[in-house]
Amino acid sequence: MNALPIILSVIIAFAATLSAGIFVNKLKKNIGIVCAFSAGFFIALSLFDLLPELLELAPQAQISLDKIFIAAIVGFVFLFAINLSFSKIHMKKHMMTKTAFQPRIGLLSTLEFCSHAFLEGVAIGVSFRLQFSLGIFIAIAVVSHDFCDGVSTLALMLNSGNSLKSSMSMLFIDAIAPALGAVATLFFAFQNYFLVYTLAFLFGSFLYLGGGTLLPDAYRMNRPVITVGFFLIGFILILLLTKIIT
Image (cartoon, rainbow, N blue to C red; front, side, top):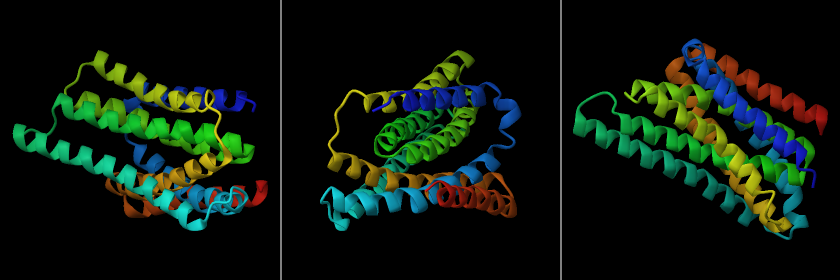
């Protein structure tokens, strides 16, 4: 397998996270638009690219569709559980301190972003192993999401009372997480059935990331008409690209 596309993708994702974070004061006013666009991107990518790929690969790997959808549900619930756990920690610390934010809350939030980012790196590596066009789509989706995460990471850290030095350190960790996930796929020989299960897990994860995280964030930051508009732009863009390329 040619590792160059994977390496280039994670370099771009790394740069997107850092650049968005560095210019956080200029970008955070428009981050809701990026979140809405990314939500449409992730959901359409799951439905029009990942799902057809799974339906085609599952019979070849002799895996029943029931097992595929169970793996997808596990991916969905996994990210939901992570977000729910961090949300409870945030609420508990907020009630204990009776303040809007504390440094540890910002730290926990950025660690949550890092867990997403690592899985996205794995998605890049696995998708390029399966199909080049699929890898390109997922890489673009990851870069757009990492752009959001870069702004959110630095804004959360600074607004929670953390120093600029510690905030930049967490930004770097968030930026390197996709690279670690992608590089991990280069050093292990995956069987086809494992790749299919991983893709199914990522299908569920991406659905939750788009519909359960990015879209609600966009609604909180934008007027509804703006959120719907940019969501549809991201959604239709992927729909058209999948029809043209595949």
